[in-house]
Amino acid sequence: AGIGGDHDDAGKKQPVFALVDCNNFYASCEKLFDPRLSGVPVVVLSNNDGCVVARSAESKALGVKMGVPWFKVREEAQRAGIVALSSNYALYADISDRITETLRGFSPDVEVYSIDESFVDLSGIRGDLVRRARTIRKRIHQWIGIPTCIGIGPTKTLAKLANAIAKSAERKPGSYPAQHAQICHLGACTPEELQALLQATEVGEVWGVGRKIGAQLRENGIHTALQLQRMSPAAAKAGWSVVLEKTVRELNGTPCIEFEDEPPAKQQIACTRSFGHPVTELIELQEAITEFACRAAEKLRKQGSHTGQIMAFIRTSPFRQQDPQYSRSASIPLPSPTSDSAHITQAANAIVQRLYKPGYKYAKAGVMLMDLQPATREQLTLDFDETMPENRVRLMLAMDQLNQRYGRGTLKLASAGGIGAQPVWGMKQERKTSAYTTDWLGLPNAWS
Image 1 (cartoon, helix red, strand yellow):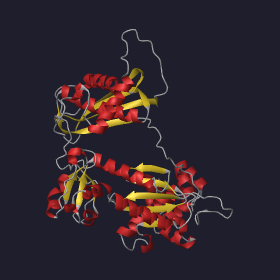
Image 2: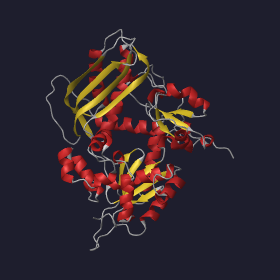
Image 3: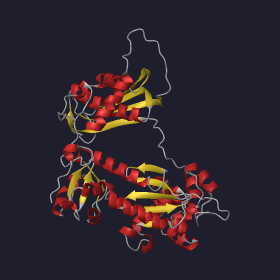
Image 4: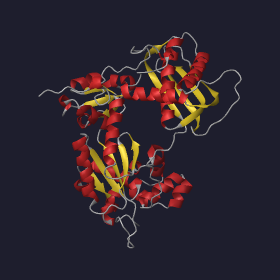
């Protein structure tokens, strides 16, 4: 019920969602500012240039697998002409923000689902929604330069499924009818067309199913999205969970997953990194922990929260079996909740100083902020030992604004190490491109 149209018989507005998904997003961002990469197979590597985390269409056609360690395929990839680049997250985040702002020109209700996917609420918008989706694709490509696919449906699950169909129909001709390539509107399908599309979709492709539940469903004879749609919601809840029950209901056109135009506040905030080179000295570990704690504190302030407990960890590499192994973590409560970078860093470094043992090659460390609560909630404490400095909130705000305007690391705590110096623990990013859109020095050059 409700899958066939945007309004019911009484004229009541029915929910309609579009999922806009950027194609090969990281690789597409890299190609934006380097014409030499047009038509060239490109892969983007993870932190420390470890694994392939994004592939252009040309790289996919050559059979490069997602997640494969780069060192295993480097020689073969270079012979095939594949260009490998380090992750450039500042660039990707900025391009993502630009796409989101473009989408807000079509609807005030946009939910950013991930860096390359957003739900757009099209409920109540009359007219041909497929034509509107074509306009969205054209504008994003014209204004920003990123190709997209769009799925439309009366629930978020169906919109996500429609998007998967749109991508498959474009990339794998014959997998779905060609008319659904790039844009697929399941709400405009006849019952027979919808049934055929669901029958052609493997159950594991349905949003919310996942690998483990997908395997369990197949063991119970549920192999396609159509079979899952026909499952009793009560049986889905009893046999699995209320989440799968909602998935079944959403496949039948009943919205069960709320639209979130504002992301909910995180319950925990973490910043962890693998080091580009092994770290052996305490002072180097503390420089890294300071950096991680400050980044986590910045995220904390951005969502308007305070933390009441800090956790930190250090560990060696489990892949270097020839080295002595060591891994420890600990947490401490704070006297009162805070978002002050200095206080959070002081606590995190105190933990690391207690955990540190000489003689080990540390490969990874991190900080997690826990027991989060709104910054508007103030917990007063008696402190007879020292007086808290004044205007700390304004100081943190000024630091965030300076780093946002002039680049991360412009202003930082002294324990993070020297300004401009590349730390020993810094990530390997030997193939990183410029921050074309967020750094004046990274602006691309143009010649007429």
